[in-house]
Length: 267
Ligand SMILES: C[S@@+](CC[C@H](N)C(=O)[O-])C[C@H]1O[C@@H](n2cnc3c(N)ncnc32)[C@H](O)[C@@H]1O
Image 1: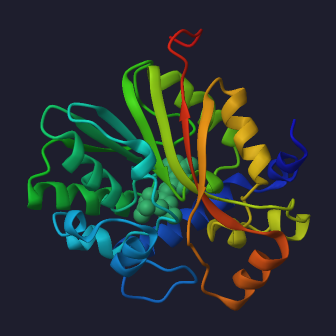
Image 2: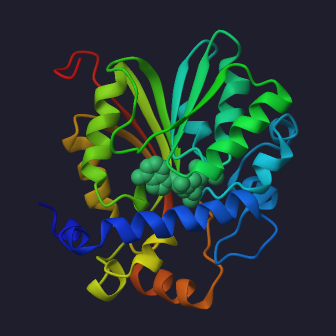
């Protein structure tokens, strides 16, 4: 087992899940409140989302956007593709992807927080995004058929999982041969100390669960995917405490493109 994953086994799973759900319920219902992390349209534009495409997406979804990077330049979505978003939140990236894959394609958002799912489903109906679907599901056990997906996307979510190996194994299972993984997430330069990794509140804030970049990339490769590109994102935490940890341990946001080999043993 990677050294950086050892402390994760000591975290109280039940408490972590409840904290994460509480935080992202608030993000869905009250995007106007100031959190320790940036949210909304200004963040999306700074990360690189083109404003002309954001203009075509429900503004309520953009208001609750809590991602950490822009990976669609790596994803290169094509018309007709099938996409799964791990931790779809209020749906901004699902709607964004839906605009690219068109009516011949489909985008499925998975999330465990009921209020996020309810919000994204309401927006789907209100704005007629008929090529999108939102399912209640853990990202460690996605309710998706094996070898059925062209591309898995995710934004600021996998760091929250204490079972990151399972997440990437499941990504490899559900991707078609040759399928891509395109994500943005929080990683570190240095291994975080136990005082941070055993603190569920810091986990729920996208800090405590972050692991060293090299370990993160190793987990992707161990699952059988080939990492093709890694790029930095101009993402910053807002609170003083978070900024301090960011500087001390090199906490940062990166985007990653990885691919499942054409011939493999998963399907
Ligand atoms: C930081 S937010 C990001 C949401 C969205 N990707 C965005 O960019 O706005 C994290 C989301 O992941 C969901 N989440 C966290 N851990 C999860 C898990 N293990 N299974 C399913 N959803 C999870 C949360 O409910 C929340 O909606």
